[in-house]
Image 1 (cartoon, rainbow, N blue to C red):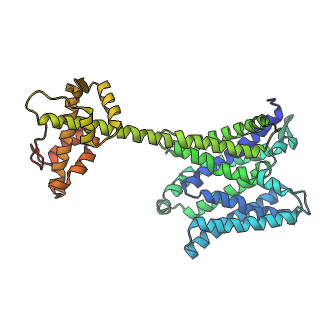
Image 2: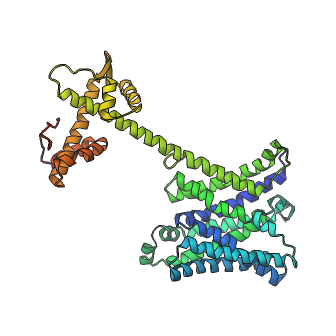
Length: 433
């Protein structure tokens, strides 16, 4: 792979565009308006086409005015149709943006006969050509697209910083914002205006496909990694930056493996963002699929260990002599467990709570103490449920069995106090001290 200054400018342009989109995308994701970014990205096409047809040029100002006007109109139409028809907002967005997108494609096709406009560039951009159109600043040749996207990133950053409190309150609790004198509707339309402007700024360089991806994917990935808004904003910017860098690297390396020269950099940046999101979706510490499956497996193992300790403690209560070792098969049948019981027994032995004796296992001093605590929690819960909820003694076993696994010493003391310090549970069994 040969890296040149052209590659650097392509990555910088893509990164600036992606970060500008990702910054606003956080608020779209948190407002459950992810489709609105998609809708505006498609719906601004008629504004661009009308600006082309009226002015006969691709100057930035008329493009921006036309696209922002249509973008805000889209937001008004979605809100209005949704309220007047009681349709779901997702359905309303689908109707509005597909209609406007179709109109935009027809108008762009018409505009292409009069001005130098490639409809394909609107969809997937021409980021590979951005280093060829430059401005000279202090002796440095800087691509115009990089300056445009940098300016948009700066404006979006100032918008978020200056109106951070208003954006945060209207995002999480519009009703509270209204009581505080903050107009949630005005903030909504201001946000939509910035989304439309960001879309236009990125259209020529990266196209609508990457704009849609970067508005949502980095923010969605960041949301899986954190529940704090400031951290989410930073993580989404990092994901957008990584997507731009990896996307261009993939675009100039992966096709070579299959005998091709290269592929669309903007498209590959979107693919890179999707790959990053997939990794986050799988391995995020709290919300990742693998992490949740692992946590569920660990919880199931903990419950199995608790059940074994509780069963052996109750078994020992029935014996008047030295505790008799219990076979694994007996435990399996009594607790109706499968293979997981072998892993639980191994883990309890490793923790010093069980010891092998003959062809069975028995509790150690540590295991007996923990089993005693579980049984105490169980019987206190039964007493509490019967006394305070007027539950029948025959109905409290299963709820108590579920609650005993999550009851600590502090809660035990509170249960004991609330139940009047009982010495026996509703089934006349002694509650361990």
